[in-house]
Picture 1 (cartoon, rainbow, N blue to C red):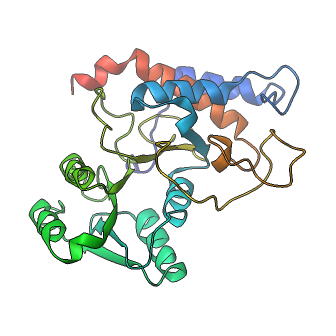
Picture 2 (cartoon, rainbow, N blue to C red):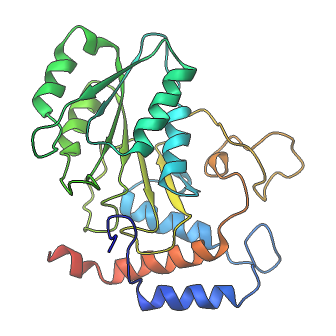
Length: 272
């Protein structure tokens, strides 16, 4: 079993939707006549969960893609510091290392973990109060570890970071869709990334990137969007800003059906 990687089995409704989409013409909105705007319905559903505007959500090819877009697109000044923890996945570590290759004048600080793999909030708090903490501009954390299964305590970290005007980026890959969320669940997370093949219970190859409109992320990938095709430059507004390339047709249909299934069966997870 590899349930830390992929959900299985998928809900019957999702499996049926996948089979139906494979047997049907790929009628994608903006790219074919008569296509339903499935991706916009996904954004609307996610926006209800994340308590944000639907146009603050871009659909990407997975969490790794979303994390690369968000991290490599950060706009920092010389001497600014990014903080992360020793509990992160390589989909966080490696883009951060690549960012430092491109931006050697920025700094990276790792917060250590205790013997159970939980990041030290005391160490983090001390750093924010230190002289070096004055350059602290971005916090990148995961919600759960796929190695230890431990909750990282990210909400407490993010609350303190936001009180200091820091941009917060949450890798919610291991938790999104697995538990009920309240209105305040993601209130301190400026950027949230998650795939569709884990807690959402859908296919690999699709995920989302939520970025509050007040956060500026540099565009690093360009291509076809099905909109503004007359222009040689990529659209600069969300959600198309980070949605270059052919959409995952079957994955989108499956993801929407999975989100609907999760919404209808939320009582199952709230009781666990």
